[in-house]
Amino acid sequence: MRPASRLLRGMRELAASRVASGPYRFLVRRWDDISDIELARRVLETEFFKEELAPVPLPVGELRSIVVLAPHQDDETIGAGGTLVLAAAAGVRLDIVYITDGASTTRSFAGREAEYIRMRDDEARIVCERLGARMHRIGISNVAPRPTVLELSRLSRLLHELAPQVVLAPWILDGPPKHRLVNHLLWLAHVHEPLPDFELWGYQTANTLVPNGYVDITSVADEKRSLLQTFRSQNEHFASYEHMAMGMSAWNQRFVTSVEPRYIETFFTLPVAEVLSLISRFYPHDLAATYRHHQQAYPGMLELHRAVMGERGSNQSALRALVSRVRSSLRR
Image: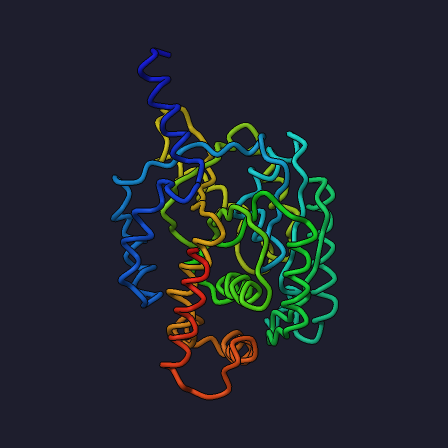
């Protein structure tokens, strides 16, 4: 590699250190005038910023510890399975936290909810064992999520006890309401009791995100595929998530320069304070829109939000003022 090329690469990697002046800052500024979460998601899905933000390789093997927040038992593997395989091989400490119990009311499992929960739990346990990861459960109902302050405190306590260097969570503009629930919980947990400092890597599941970082998982693509196959309850009864996740990783090759076929996992990486600031911009503005009027997720999260924020009525101006104060505290 020529000296000029090495210097350029070094500068890009330095810029990707994800400090307060990192390469994502222009995006944060560009988002600052948008409060409509669905509008932001649609704008970003056009890949309008693709030419302005070149993702750089993330130093997975150099990390000390990773905590993964997964809405359901398989999201962590869909979005970051290859990254976790590489991290495990490098001796990185892994903890996977499943936020919901994975229950379902579909016809395939009518009247067998407890059996289905056990099935998904067993699948997740196998994956965690193969990764050498510790498994944690918050246990919020996936059918009728009604998280309480007690469960919020448990999530906060876990993050304080584990003190991760990096937390993986769904991309904050991901569409599925249960995925947004995870980031909302993270924000409310901070409001309830300030979280420790860490980097947050937003991973890709059902979304198109704007990546500023990536992990080349080509060398462990077969291992990721094998982990995905473990979730038979999903692949055989809902959709071939194995096929779609590997296809998504293949399509992500467009972010790297390579003639040879590659598998790439993409991330939007931020210091946690910046993530919380963005969440405060998009999520509380209109919780019904945030949860896409989802009849399962919205009522329970509205109740928890009001409990944590001290809101019992519909005084939106007071809520906006409180959100503004929270955002200001995060930027200090």
